[in-house]
Image 1 (cartoon, rainbow over the protein chains, first blue to last red):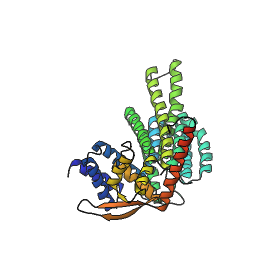
Image 2 (cartoon, helix red, strand yellow; image 1 turned 180 degrees about the vertical axis):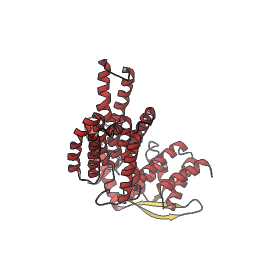
Image 3 (cartoon, each protein chain N blue to C red; image 1 turned 90 degrees about the vertical axis):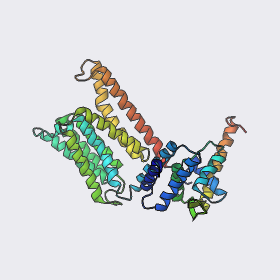
Image 4 (cartoon, chains in turn blue, purple; image 1 turned 90 degrees about the horizontal axis):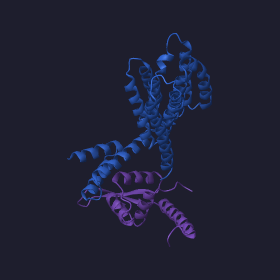
Length: 277
Length: 106
């Protein structure tokens, strides 16, 4: 079998796990279409990859893939903590109020995930003051993102669990571990920036199949944009910028603004797309 | 009123309205019916068939293998015929209104 045939079969196996007949049917139609010159192999592979992502996304609410979705959604705030480097600052032993802010945000996140939205908002609001005192606006933005990311958790999580609740807690554990690791000062700053961008970009791609992911990406870009880039650009123009030049800030400003627009457009188009048969 | 149909779903239902068909034949018929404007990939076709099946608009209609590869057939359901008729009526109405203001050729 050619590499193309093997790749097609591999994608079909993921898309139609457990339905061998369907796997054979789809891979044989792809071979027939390409063989008859009716479609180009690259286009067929693209179509099949989109189908596979869509199928996996559809399955995720009722099967164990929930953990992947939750981990992806919660990785967004983790990545943000990384970029801001604020978690390590907030967890400075000298700064007890930072711990309180992080703990309150974490509790609010869990409440939101369990669909107790109103108490989550109240708790998140209470977290703002100690967090701001300890680590400045960065941690507030991180907390807002953490709360917003909970919308990406499948609706089954919590009370009417259609997938294992243990999977949800595992995802929370993974995200919390990532956040702590990312906040450690030993990690390279450039690597952290790339990782943050990669996470947000992956969320946009996933957002094409589920608008909630694109909305989480929009929150990531939007918070960074509002909390750092706009302020930083203003400071740089006023001659107050400490680390970055105006050119660098303009590039970041454009990148964040573009990320925000792309994620919002993706969320809008995705929600229209999935509402049609 | 149910969910709106995507363009590809309308063409797939239109092909199946004239009789049951299998994957490759549906792709070929949609291309022919749309004068080559709509060329479905296998991924697009089976994604659409999954959605149409979940919505109760198409159903499987057996499997045959006459010398070639095994083929699964699909057919339109009565709900699919109603959905297709509704969609065609909506599109016709839009065209009629656009003609009224000179934005569509007769």
